[in-house]
Image (cartoon, rainbow, N blue to C red; front, top):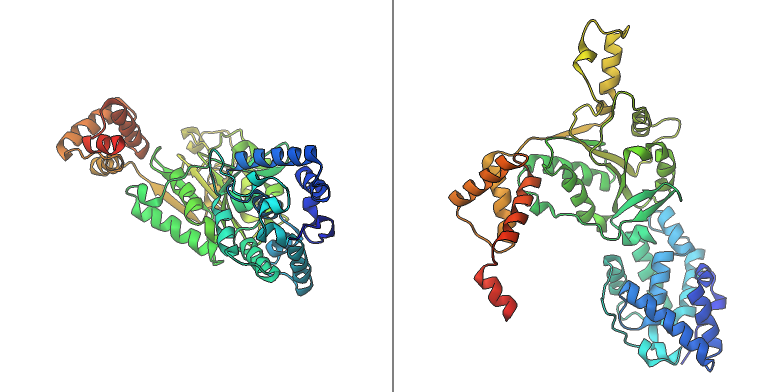
Amino acid sequence: MKTLYLEKLIVCRSILQKPIIQKLAHVLENTDDISAVADFSSDLIEMAEQEGWSGNLIRALILHLLSQEGSLAAQMTEASQGAIGASLKKAFVSDMTILLPAFNQKASQLVPVSLLDDYQPTLPHTLEATAFLEQELGTKTSPEEITDAFLSFYSRYGYGEIASSQAFSWDEKSKRLRGIRHFEAMDFADIIGYKRQKDQLIANTEAFINKRPANNVLLVGSRGTGKSSGVKALAKAYYTQGLRLVQMTKSQLTDLPVIMSLLRKYASKRFIIFFDDLSFEESDSEYKYLKSAIEGGVESRPENVLIYATSNRRHLIRETWRDRQDGQDELFRNDSINETISLADRFGLVITYLEPTQDEYLDIIDHYLRMEGYNIERDELRVLGHRWNLEHSGRSGRSARQFVTHYLGSVEKPAYQKDVEEF
């Protein structure tokens, strides 16, 4: 039975700053200190409940810290897009030799609390990235094999929130990205219709992921037609291929240079900066930051960043008939018009979404009802769907889902569903 000599860590030394690791280090040297053992175990179990860890909790803790907090090896793997130097790898192998007991021994062989060996949390949860790391580790027992498993993980997912989150928001106060923990995105298969639009969106994004030339994208058209859903679906579909979504608001446009500089550091990942329902009034000046970011000001846009936006306005900036009247007091009328449309022109790919036809609208409703186990005759569906769109905001994917929600809340479940639940 071996112990962990954490003070000897080199590449992973940053984890020693964590209070729980400091407690673990003390307990490893003082296993007869009952109070310290209980204090550490209490903190570890609390983390396990919050994160949904199962099994050997000391192993889970080390995996969490090395995948979420990272290490010098993680940083350099990210910066070099997948490879680290021979000397750094040798130092990383040395650290894995030190940490080997955490991977190969029971937790109770390190800290005398048997509960830590095979813990079962109230709400088990495993991140997709963590599941990949566990799969890579498998039954590997040598420091070299464990090192290779971590480097494979860093190369594919990165580290920290970049590894564990598909989408991010921008925190203006701290000037950092924050992972959206409960990010809800549809599958493309559940976005009914708009095949041409989806094909364009996917083709451009796949070119971007594969480091081929790709355009910034503007999705315009009728409200509730799935523009935003399509962009979010990209983040879900291509997460394992290194794509991440950064959702921003119009008010955060002044921070674009800071964000661009930050994203440049994550060279192995591809980022879509996403503005949902974007539009500007004539008096707004923030759009100039977006124009500069798309085409590059003094500092060029990072090659691993694209900008996608959705809008109900084709030219993004509000236009009036007065803008096109000969009698307006603008000295150079064409200059005013060109300024208005110049922002939209900077998006190389413009995808237009029109209101669905009656049949397309009914297809959307039918798809979501079938997902819930309901099969309504087309004639009845036509009457119900038509009545709903007349009483509400017209035909759209959004109103179709709202109808389905209303329908599900007002009728009983199909008999076979009841039988399954009772069984």
